[in-house]
Each structure stands twice: as structure tokens, then as C-alpha cells.
Length: 324
Image (cartoon, rainbow, N blue to C red; front, side, top):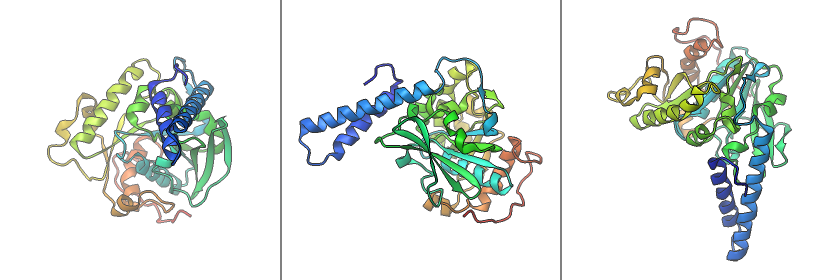
């Protein structure tokens, strides 16, 4: 195991080793320990190689995002807050408005909220390590690029640097990124792995933070913003400047008062995506996301200058196309 990895990657490598050992059912304990050690070492080695292929954590200067159009990283306040749903809704609304879109899924494949977002798998592109690759598929007319691995776990730092997704971009106008991992781990080391999509550059990324309309979720959002604050002060990342609230039309009584100093600054312009029973039950599938969710997201896309029109305008006139 390498001793120069960020803590989240060390933890992930150990978890991978334990998972591999547990999968060896009927194996004697000494052999199981050996499987755990070898798998953990392989995972740590892969994470180290991937990070060396990316941007050094202490590097200065902005990233070149020109090949990705307007970059919208979608970060969750906590696991299960709904970042994958919001990412899919934004990508669908953009492509149905005739924008060329890349939807990036950085999650561990077995825990991805976009695992069923395409009808079939597309071609595979080389990644920074033989065990970590990129698969591009179609979601309607948008390209869905996912991380694939032959290892039991993808740690936050094992996500390939953004440039490895460029082959799937194909002159897109917008790139929506589902950050995908536990935001607490990502925020601890955001310049490597999935967090690299937050790096300042030209044109500047426009991150959004997703939470639920509950006091615990607002508290989690505050802590994620606090953890990203130190990196923001260095000028290396673009912090989330927009709050998206999933599963509600407004703040329930008494909830907004739980907001901390950082989230309070985002409350006034928060965008609400209402509860949808189909998505709540079945998650994101290859079908187009419901029109009521896309309509609710239009003010956000206008605010981000990804769609024309005033940011405060409600509703839209998108046709009810089906994504095939």
C-alpha cells in the first residue's frame, strides 16, 4: 500500500481489500487475508497512477475547459441527496433544447445513480490505468460517459482526470458532471479525481449543490461548503454558488432557519425540483426525465446562461420527446 495517498483513497483501498476477501467464500482465513492485502495494494497502486496522470494537487493555474463547453459539476450535500437525478434532468432539458451535451458519471459503477441511464453500452476508451477506463454510451442525443473498473471499488482519487473524458465530448456545448462520490471525501481532496471538475479555468465551471428540503440536509450542505472553503480561498476551485432542492416546491416551515452562514447566502435563489413519484420509485432510467422536473430546472439553466431567456421566468415549451 502506498503511504502518499490521500486518506479517502487509503480507506477505499482497504475497503476494496476487505470486500475481495469476503467474496472468497469458503476460503481459509490466511488465504483470505492474502486476497485482501493483494486487492488493497492493487487498488492503492491504481489510485496512485491515476492521480499522477491528473493534475498535481498543488498545481496552480486554471484548467482549459474549452473542449467541454459550459461545465456544470453537480455535487450532493450527502449521499442520496439526488445529484444523479439533477444531473440527468439538466442534461435532458439541454438536449431537448437542441444543445449538444456530455453527461459525465464519476461514481463507483456499482453505486451509480446513472447505472440504468442508457439503453445499451457504447465503446470503451482507455483511461489512465489498465484497471480504470471510460465507457461512452448514448442517452438520447447526449453522450453518457462512465467510469469502469476491474477492481472492487473506485476510490474518489481513482476517477480519471477530466481530460480522459475529452474523447467522448465531441465538440459538446455543455458538460454536466455527476460528481458521484461521498461529498465529504471529495471535498477533502477536490483537486484529484472527481473533484477536479471544480477546478477554476476558462470558461469557468458553474457548480451546483443539491440537497433535500430538510434540516439535516441543510446542515450537511453547510459542512460541505465549509470543507470546500479552504480550497476556494486558494483560488483553485469554483465553489457551488447555486443550491438545488430536490423533492419539494418550497421550504417547509422551520427548515430554512437551520441554514448556516454559507448556505444562507444561497437560499434566496434556490431552485426547487418537485417530488416525482416515478423517479422516486424507479430512479433514473433510459426514459426522458419527467417534464415537470425539466420545467422546474429551466430557471437554473437560464441563470447559468445555458438557455436563453430571463432567469426568473417559469416553465418552458419543450416538446415531450422520448429519449431512445
